[in-house]
Length: 341
Image (cartoon, rainbow, N blue to C red; front, top):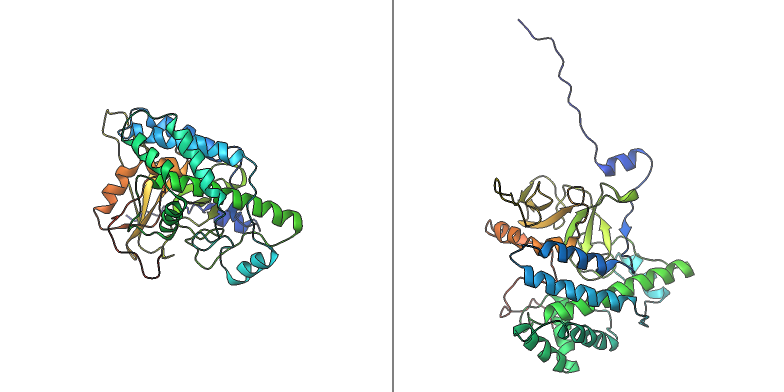
């Protein structure tokens, strides 16, 4: 006897499709908040540190974030891109504040030394204290060389012990540059930040993202944004699409799973709040941090605290598309890429 019942398949639309059908468009950019940018990262890192295998390091990075927030609140006078630069970048589909090419003001080194001073007040007599002392005594040329290597992705000669502090100072500089540039562009009716040719890099500074985050706030709810590793800008990218090659045919996800009866202390272990979005076409992956699973999630902090997931995914041969300046992966003795300083 034939079964005449009808089976109906219901397809759930993505937030991007809902916005399009309503005649709207997903907001492309989400700017950092000056008052809370690094403070939220600090709070999340201290929360994640409890019972974590990387507790001491997470607290150290939280201390960096605390010092970064104080620096971002200071009145800084940086040279900003003028109208010609902004219009030229918009026409070329290029970031107007390129990390590798934008002339760094000498004052960034004073910012770095203030960060180092703040950290030296908090550490004991250990290896970290020795590293900070050497960084505090470093000359201007050596600091500029380290910054060049870090911003160009050159591991050869990069001091991995100094990198979180050098990177932390550069994060404050570029976050401030982005906020001041956007404020000036809005006030003077100039082009601001828009889409660039490389959708996998930051529209403001051209850096790679640290991770992506599915947000739950206001008009950004349900949308995925990539978090810049340098300037804290977030830009929209549709879900289930490789952030490296742009394809979506062979995407799969990996996450950490909590063992039965064991409380999970690693973010991502509970219901996959941090997952690795892996592309079998190009062999790259980027983590997705889901705020609907944990409303307190913060892309940089959660990426750092879920480094175990990176280790597991790397065993499959996949390469990380993102970068976290607080914990760099790579061989410091490796040869630099062609054209790098």
